[in-house]
Image (cartoon, rainbow, N blue to C red; front, side):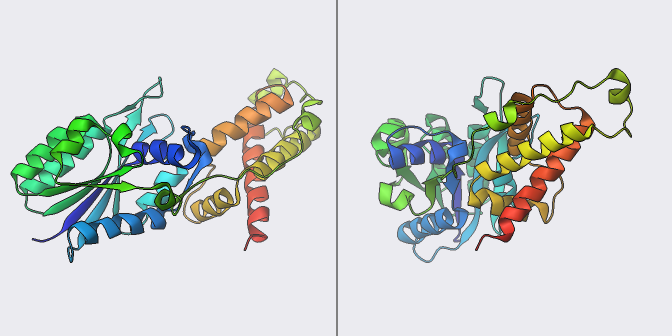
Length: 292
């Protein structure tokens, strides 16, 4: 059957995309992905290398912390049509594990079952070469996509192994990836000059006991200040997330709690944390109401 698969190594996409845009590697947290934009570019590669060949689906390979699960971005990608998000894990040293083996397995199985005739692969890792070789033995043509300068970011043996290569320029990357613009906000020291009152053991043990009014007022200020630091794109993403999910996504929740701990002088108890998260959500929704 004449169909193509698209396999994306998200780690490569963000690492090399950040370098292409700014000349230096950027943390994932400061890069903003237009998912539909990158899908459009990948589909263009399919039509260039395998004209008239429909796409079976997009396989999106990434890592996630076991303690936190998928990120907000990964959750959103997983809900898009024709995308299968495949997650390895990120260990305590921040290293991504298990992603290459997922890519290799999918390439081999899709080829063995005759599900595809072509595959577009956005990656640079030597470890996926064995999957390329075996898929080719089953008759699948592999089209490798790299980000300039791809000769320096992709395995030489992988480049030699595939059937065709494509290099995306900085201008192409800029169509779907950008560096987040963080709005300027007042210094958190205006909050840090105060310290939350210590919680007595009796109060901390009583789940129904409300936190002191002063504590809640300061927590609300922290939540509002933190909501002001996230980008408009993150505001829209969070509001979309809350349409189907509850709670604050882990990548925002961790930063929110760290900010409160730094600005307010101590860890919050569970009652205060719930209040902080609720006020953060209220502030985000308030910002969202004023966005175009």
